[in-house]
Amino acid sequence: MDKDTIIKIFSDYGLQISDDVAVKFVSLMNLTLEANKHLNLTSITDDDDFVSKMILDSVLVSKDLDLSSGALLDVGTGAGFPGIPLAIMYPELNVTLLDSTNKKIKHCQTVVDELGLKNVSLSNFRMEEFARTHRETFDFITARAVAPLNVLLELTIPALKTGGTLIAYKGSSYEEEVEASSHALSVLSSSIDKKIEYTLPTSTEKRVYLLIHKSSKTYEIYPRNYRIISKNPL
Ligand code: SAM
Image (tube, rainbow, N blue to C red; front, side, top):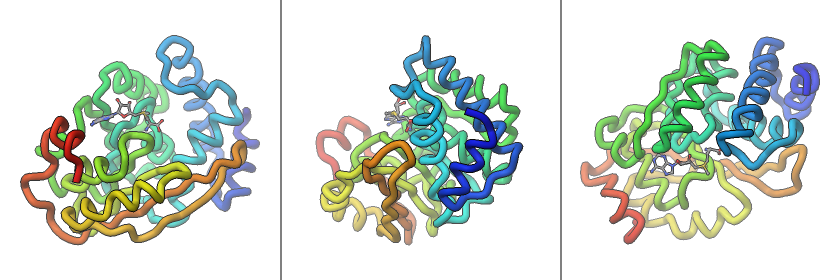
């Protein structure tokens, strides 16, 4: 797919992007699909699906939330999604990509270097460990396909600043996850500010962004260690 087609797809979804951003998106697609042949990063192999489900899906939230500056942590980034597309679109946004799998972080480093992104740093940690040393640090945290919402809240909210926003990218069954998360939201002084439902160009599946607001400092005991979180989630 060429840059002009990407510009048109984004414009149809209400997002205006420059030639430079579209060129970087094309490079990101080519680099990821090429690496995917031997690294098994994503099940998506087709250009149209990649632009839709990996790139547009990553950045559509910026229509509802100003991400043009601040510090953003992308937890469980995998091959760099949604963090890398957001870093390409917003050069003033400081993006940290975090994943517990070393080969994924190494791949992300190669992509960041190839694209010359100066606003991205990388961390090869488990989130529950990283959150203990980076408390109340980030303005935004993103997570797509990482953990059920109640688990994700405990992993991420401690690293969010008071007043910051967790962006949870979810699929169509999100309502059950929200129902199971009322205790976690309350213990972690957080609330769901907005639920934004949408569909993508190459799919009829309903998707949603949950924008979760943190209203006060998190108790020091959170996050607990992962064995306890998964055995006895909030
Ligand atoms: N966010 C990417 C996307 O949407 O394409 C990747 C999703 S992949 C299904 C989940 C990723 O989360 C994996 O790369 C895994 O290593 C990472 N992950 C899961 N639990 C984690 C944790 N507690 N700390 C850090 N990374 C974690």
